[in-house]
Image (cartoon, rainbow, N blue to C red; front, side, top):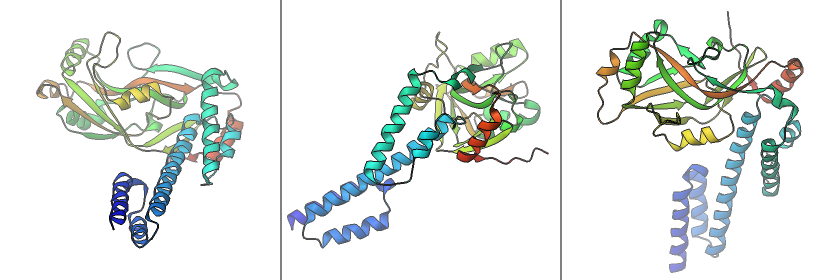
Length: 320
């Protein structure tokens, strides 16, 4: 009986660790089966093996999705890899496919390929003559959202890809993102920049990334990402504080599009007063700024576009 109780305790501990990976009804049924089993150790090992297998399958599915998003829209470069990815849940097959993905990513870091000449790194900001933000929410249109944000409320607002100002740039992705309150009046700009040093910003990318490629639009669905950082910057222009998500996106390969639905909220530091910000609610636009990459126009874009449509979901938009 002690051995049986020990086995059930082990199952309960396993269950606590893997609720997100295993259906509760099936697990309860399995526990009932094990309770009546004579070989409790073997049954427990079998369950733990099944749990680990399901976890591996779940991670592999996310890895496949991430890989497709990472290479977008250059499906033609990775046709062999994309065609090799399957839903086969055999462990040996999964391990083999993981090795292929890893090998491709490592090779990408050191080998210059034909597509690299089309990839352009850029800063998306209004601080330079030749650059623009990812997106601008003009006060004339979004005054209510800007007012709420400067008063301490959370807003949900969309950076609409069809209304961006980058028609000449394809498949824009970011690895650093933030917001800027922008005024054409330099005095007001200096004042609000100073006041904002007493605030952090929390931005949530709600998961759907929208991309433009060759005058068509595509959507890739993923998990939401919460990005936290301070307005105050170091001499290196890095935030004084930020969360790990901010760093991982910055260090990692570019995947996410700035064109999505965002949740944004300002958080005061040391009980900073929102009244010092709200007085600028009619004076500033809200800009989506940061660092990213895009694909400049290609001569063979028509051929590539056919391949893109085979691997990615087109986002139909009525522009009229």
